[in-house]
Each structure stands twice: as C-alpha cells, then as structure tokens.
Length: 372
Length: 139
Image 1 (spheres, each protein chain N blue to C red):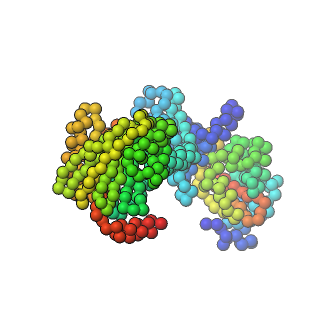
Image 2: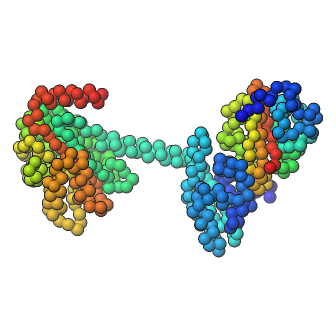
Image 3: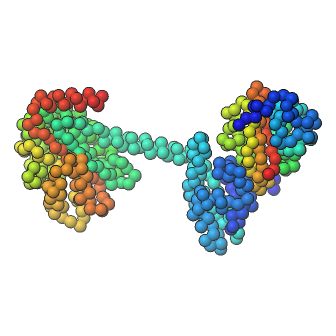
C-alpha cells in the first residue's frame, strides 16, 4: 500500500479522484503543483469551482450521465496564467472509473506546445522562403492573391515572380508545380529559384522556357509543371510571352475589353524538350496584364471556357481597382464562397507604358534606397 | 513583503523556549537561525529545515504528524522534488532559488496521504545562511 501511494505521489502526471459532484477524494502533488496558481487560497475540497473557470464543458461531461463509465472528456487544453511567469498549458482527461468515482488526469504540455509552435514557425518560414520575394517595380505595380489548397500549408505548388532588369524590362511569371501538397511546394521552390537565376541571362521567352524544360527534368517533382512567362518592355509597351501548358495571359484594356493572349503555347515543362516558340503582343497605356493558375477557374461542374469567360468578365468589370484589390476580387469572384480544391495564384500587373526612361531610373533608385 | 523592518534582533523576539514559538512570530527567522535541530520537535507548527540546495536537514514532529511521513524517510532528500513535489513550482520552490532573503506567507494545499489539506506556508531564508526553512500550519 505504501509503495502504491509512493507511485501516485511521485507521478509527474496530475491525478484527482472526485465524486460525481466534484468533491475531491484524492489528489497527488503533481496536480497541486500544476493548479496552484488557480487554487490560490482555496482549499481544493471541491474541483468544480476550479473547472468552472478553466474548462466548464468538463463539468457538463461529468454530470451529463452518471451511469456512463469510461472516458468522459479527453484532450481538453487548459491555459494556466502564472503571473509574470508565463503561461502553462495543461491537457485534461476525465474518466469515470466506477460509479461516483471520476479520475481527472492533468498533463503539463507547455514544452510540447512551445516545440510545436516553433516547428510551425519554421515550417511557415521555409514555405514562404520557397515562394521568395518578387522584385518591386514602381512603374509596374503588381498585386497578387495567393491561397494554398492544403489547410495546413501556407504555400503550395503555385508560384509567381517579378524580376526587374536594369533597363526598361520587367519579367513576370506565374507557375504551377503538379499537385498541391508539400512535395509540390518543394519542387516549386527549386524550380522558381532556378528560373529566377536563369532569367537574368536569358530573358527572352522561348529560350527561357527551353532552359526551364531542362531544369524541370533535373528537379524531382518539377516535371509537368506549367508556367506562363511575360517580358514587358515598359518603354515600348512590347510584351513578349510564352506558355508551357499554362492557361493564357489575360489582357484588360482601359475601355474594358478583355482578351486572352493566344500565342506562344507549348506543352508543360520537361515533356518534350526543345523548340519552344514565343509570341509578341503590343500593350497600350493602361492595359492590365493578368496571370493566374488553373486553380482559379477549373471546376468539375463547369466547362473551362465558360469559367474563363467569367474570369474575363469579372476582370473587365473590376478593372478600376488597384492591382492587389483586383487580384483579390478575382479570386473571391471566381471562388464565390466555395473552398478551393487546388492552389490559387492571381497576379495583376499594371505596367505604366511609355514611362520616360529617366523617370524609371529615378524611381528604381528611390525604391532600392527606401527598401535597404 | 519581507519582514525586514521587524527583524531587528531583540524586538518582538519569540519566547526563548521553542515550544512557545508561534507560526506568525515576527522574529521567527532570527530564532530559527539559531535553533538546534535537536530542539525543533517541540515547535508547535510544522517545520522543515533545509540546506540551500533544498536537501532536508530537519523534519519536526508536528510536520511528521501532519504528513504521516517519519522524519528518517525524509531527511537527506530534496524537499521540493521528492518530499513535496506539489511545491516544485514558481510559487514555492522557485522563490527559494530566486531570493537569498525570504520571509513570506502564502496559502497553499498539501496532499498529505493523497487528501487535499489546506495549509498556510511561511517561506524563510536569510542571506548568507547555510539553511532555509519552510513553516507549515493547517488552516
């Protein structure tokens, strides 16, 4: 008997035995150690007043059906605020071991919780690093709305990037690695950073996508990724573009006309290397360039062309919005309250065509100074 | 919080015989600093004498009656870890670790024989002393 008592006395898990009315029959030291901040000057003869403030639903679970034996409540998290000593997190279980005998088990999960939070932080940071930072271009404001399909991921297989050159050109791309799980995220991250480095010395659409084919072949999980690429010359308004199996770029003019760019099409990356073709489109002042992934419009219950027409109509109607607001309006308008099954990325670029070269240089300098 | 102003030797000192000491005596810490472990059993409230690493040096008869633990099962053990794990938190054990000089009372609950027992604690320690004390009184 003494050995049994020592066993419960030294047990690092908090233990109570209470009756159905909450009267404490037995309690071990660990339970007091954990609850001491909320017991205060109380006498602990009754557990319900303490539960009433910490986890009232446990009282309901205990009193609901006195005939029910076995687990009554499990995994309830309780927060104990300990003055200036931080907070403690306890996990509570209630088990009716016999009629009118309820065992309450308390476990201190503060350390586990801290670890889990840190792991989440690391995971989120790594994911955001995969998506990286796009360049900011004062003469071409860009707005992006991005949503990962997986509830526990911040970043999925979709990506976007904006790369500013020292002359008047800006490259924009939106891509989609196959799938939307963590594997897609890692493939996307590698593909994106390889393409970002490649664009620097190979900005023309067709040769760039040929490089992209080779990169995708070399990168686990990157094959069959799709990407739309556009190179905008802000001085001339020329938009060179190409697509590897990606939905077409949407152009919205100031008057409201919205049209998809038809050229530069090809297969997804890494399938049939070589022989990419690019196309050219002349932008007018005020044109918006909209790039997106298939998660934005694909639905099992509606044909793609119908959905793309809807996207064009929405973009036309909302074209007066600033880029970020417009990208959000398109995502919300296309989702219409449904939960996305795939990652979604919508990018709206508002290039200021014919911006004088001098202006561009000045603003670039200002921008880099203010960000450094 | 500490009874610094009341600790002047000679003022309000407990009676000379430890049998007459009371839990709330203003000069209790002074008296304890000079008490011999042989004399603690006549004290009318529970008293645990520890070294500064919380190893039990003395466990008096009153405390032994309250807890049901014979002194020889307790002496030499770490009080906060082994003897009274319910005090191993910031409210009690951490106070001794953090503060060299300590004289503070608080209401607490002990778990003698697995039964919740409301007690009043007085945490006592003098800077530079090799000992620290916990006085216990049922409430």
